[in-house]
Length: 245
Length: 250
Image (cartoon, rainbow over all chains, first blue to last red; front, side, top):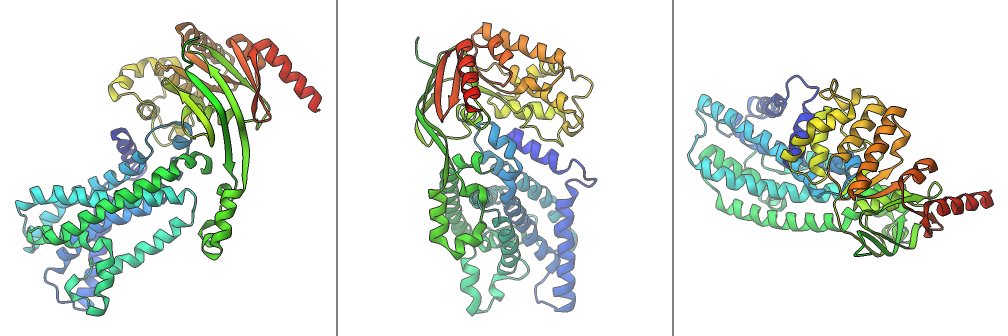
């Protein structure tokens, strides 16, 4: 597991200059863009919108990157999967953990910016809240990524579908707006989106230093379903990987 | 003979062909019943009713024509695929030497790849680190081990691959055509190493078209033909049988 994660990180940044800086730069660039579009131009009524955006974009990036990488998880490691018998779900797990580490490294930056802009609090509750959320978040993504990775060995179209789906989902998740702002007609849509609860919970913790236990509870349930389902799909399909790759 | 270390009991293996063709999701959505039926119906039989026992410490050669199922046999032993029917038991740590260096990542250095491969093959990090020097020395790569593997020549990659597999203290060593690469000197070194394994009681399953190496290195041979173990026995007899079958096919 450790070895695979190290490999993942080394490979990722082998030929880039900025390395981990990219996982910081990406959400920052988006935050600036959205801030201009929605605050400066459309004038949304959310206070400290820039920090608000970042508190949603950092966790979203973890979700997005992990799921976008998932379709190629087994395909890119075809030579390992075909030649060596080892617990293959570790490939997906290490990719989710790698993205999680990136997310973790973004938190100090968020804290610094929060202090700078005077929005949000750097609270002691982060110390026990963040680990709980990290685990729940990681499990939700792991379960989904495992299912996606397993299926895409057989249906390569899944990669395109995920790319499209994540773009759509981004706007159905309260990242650039607050959940309460959504009109009643669309509330069920937001409620059905499993990522809603993760983003809402992170934001409550990162901006207000509180745990939104309701959101965390729902997210935990989703985590259980995702892991059980993902593992079941993986178990069913994994013996065909070496043949289909 | 006590309990065999590898035992195939009436093993059958067939591959679903639709999986390779890959109609994608489109087919599945447009015509789900047919797409699913295709997936189950079309398959190619590679092994059928294949039985074989390999005793601990034995070295056995697998010979057969291209596509006879030799590599499938090794993949089954390595545990990357499972039999469709029948049972297969493998009672020991397997070190696969399939297509040398296949598990290497081109962007990582030789050293990183050795670590990764070693860990994936079931060793702890400390164990691999302890063997690192011997692995590098055997592969004769002291100068370039910290370069990315993509800069290695085929021969260098093969040497490193062999060296990793050879230093993992396997109980079962799977060798697939590896001696085809590398220069004569390294081939000789590999053969010496395989001999050493034999004398230490490591079980070896050896696939090669080099019948010379087969007769040099193996106690027994199995001829794979018509999806079955067509012949199991002495190497010389197996080679004779195999060549006779090849002649008559022409």
